[in-house]
Length: 159
Image (cartoon, rainbow, N blue to C red; front, side, top):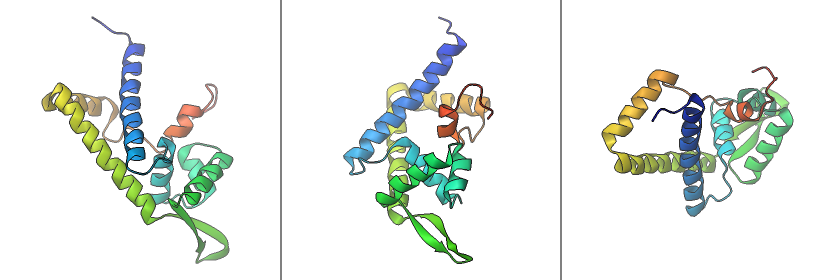
């Protein structure tokens, strides 16, 4: 049975959603019930150098207001902190806390466990083949930090 290109896109999206939903539920079971997928993107962007709301907004392709709200939530939950900038006393710089890095580590562990579950369901060689084919089609680093903004942008809005 031949599928359409739209079917392929929906299957890929469904696979993504299945993994992310399962990981979010497992994080909650492990005591991190307040973590959402967008938080992972934000924490990773901050760890990679997005040390202000403006920079986080740029990296995630979201509004500065959305970035500020995300930062507030992450700060309230202890995943990020604001520290004085040693070069400019008026400025506060974002950094990921140990708890934030622990959430990332837990998430990575959970995704490995989910991958192992998929390998048991369809076979390790089949899963590796799928991964090899996807890598050939989309590259080794297919997802950028700006994915949350990309999902939310208007159709006519430039990338």
